[in-house]
Amino acid sequence: MQKFEYDIVVVGSGLAGLTAAFYASRFGSVAIVTKSELDTSNSWFAQGGIAAVTGEDDNPELHINDTLVAGRGLCDYDAVEVLVREGSDRVRELIEMGMPFDREAGKIVLGLEGGHSRRRILHAGGDATGKELTRYMLRKVQDTKNIASFEYTTVVNLFSHGNCFAGLQAIDFRRNENVFFKSKAVIMATGGLSRLYSRSTNPHTATGDGIALAYDCGAQLSDIEFIQFHPSALSAPGRDAFLISEAVRGEGAWLLNKNGERFMTGIHPLAELAPRDVVAHAIYNEMMKSGSDSVFLSLKHLDPDYISHRFLTINQTLREYGYDMTSDLLPVAPAAHYMVGGIRSGLYGETNVHGLFVCGEAASTGVMGANRLASNSLLECLVFGKRASERAAEMPESHCLVPDPEPIRLNSGTDKVYLDFRNEMATSMMINMGIIRAKSRMESALNRFKEIRDLFEDHQQDYNRLKIKNMATLCYLISRAALVRTESRGGHIREDFPEENPSLRVHIIQQIEKKPIFVPVIDKK
Image (cartoon, rainbow, N blue to C red):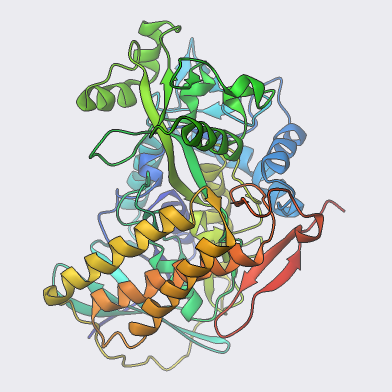
């Protein structure tokens, strides 16, 4: 087994991972390990933008309040304050470094999205902010000499012994070889898990591998019952869900039912710009009422020249699907989009496992609460990616004995087994753990997920079997937390408990071989 040694290893190459690696390189040698190419991540496909207080009519208190409101009472105030106040600094740093945010007459253009009380969304390339921002940070990382990149390399094991972190084991797909990375600290920036669902806006790599590995290593998971469904993903027969950015509704698009009527105006004062959980739930109810597979997004009343320029990437992709966003009604339906919870961390990305840090969508910092405010995710990557790198750099040198683990094998003979179980679990998650949940359905799903997990507990050092076990573990943990949370709040809606329960204004924490526990939300002092 080939062995490497770095001061810090970053797992994942989205914006959080790239940011963490860039800042960590100031303190020592860094490796970025990613299971696909460096430019394949949720960050790369983020259309909306990045929220930060930069406008003259805006202030941190407004952004903090908008985040708290969207979070439905489950945001930790200290984490939100760090996000907002340091977020403005991180964005200004990017601007000073030369990040090309969109401008008009020399002034940065600020957009509006659901849940925001001010125009504070910075964009780049119109609707390609994630791509432009990630590409910009990727260039910074590639220009930094003491950062090594390992593409098509997936982590399969983390090794921690008490207060001693040894490193991690990975598979190099291209060479079909196992690799061991020794380091004093690992920063997990592996993204979310929305590809556990059959209908998702995420790339196929977003299956929560890093979260399952951290859990197996003893890390606490928090709030993973909250899955955010993006309200407006294109619903085209036989095609993957294609995200139509919330910024489209920010520019005035309407949601219409099958009779061509706006239905959000009677549901929320912000209508189409209500928080995502409200809009997704309303669309779901409208679909159930009409028996249809979608509602419609309409921009026919807006300036076509402005729309086609403002949403250049979305418009081009929709044309490939056979739609013109300036003149056609676009069939849309919610799709699994963002994991609100994740690996529980402190304000510097630290977990309860010595030497293990986390940032980005994989983390549960307390910022998102029960429902992420639009465009806070890229900001969280910048703020907590930098913070995690600083705290990881302070770790003392690791003098752990490096284990000699048994290699995990790639075996094409179990490909079909993997696909069959993956598809079964993804379908079950969409039906039983989707937008609307109920006890009987969740219990049935949970029992099946446990059966699958137990069946593949002994994965026999086979990578496909290991993936099934990890996915089943996550599906089980999401279901267990959702059953424990006997209320409806944010991205967790139960038809048998339709109201918020004030006594459940808590984080549900799960840890291997322990029962779920409740931890109170941190309020403003």
